[in-house]
Image 1 (cartoon, one colour):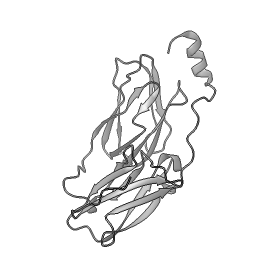
Image 2 (tube, one colour):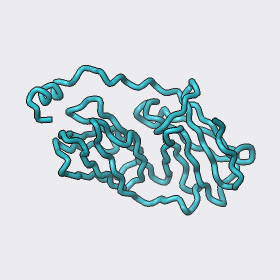
Image 3 (cartoon, helix red, strand yellow):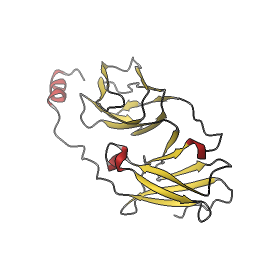
Image 4 (cartoon, one colour):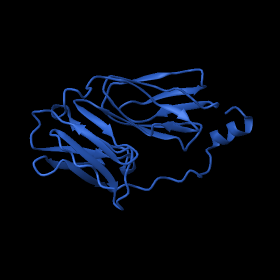
Length: 212
């Protein structure tokens, strides 16, 4: 399906795909705040990262420095959320659906989440400062609203967690608004891990005792 052609100025449509041409959801497009319209929110946010069917939802969350992430648990089992990532190492020990712990993020970078009980649970936060990150939708698409003073040529950064868990592997893309307002970006991503990997000792222990 072809992307719709944009008939208005200062908007940029992007489609993110892998090397095979398959569309990539949860790709982050990072743009300097100076190039974005005033209508784009550039303030800290409160975001929600839920736990549903032993998965983090969403898989990728974009937020700004100073933002707060709330971690409800919609499962009827307990989870133990943690991160070892340098921008924000933290731990939320075993908790149930009656609690809504939160964490503030005050340094830019990628924060990878895990669950000490369920090894298959992985998600990522991308924290930015002076830039805005936007995640592609299920069709690998997103629309950027640009400022009236954006230069005709500028660069953006495109990153997907399956490229690697830091921004050093992100792709720099040069944009020329005088030539196009629809851009397709291909990323070289790693295949996702299978969900049927052996359970960790901790997960096996909790399965045996019935405390999940």
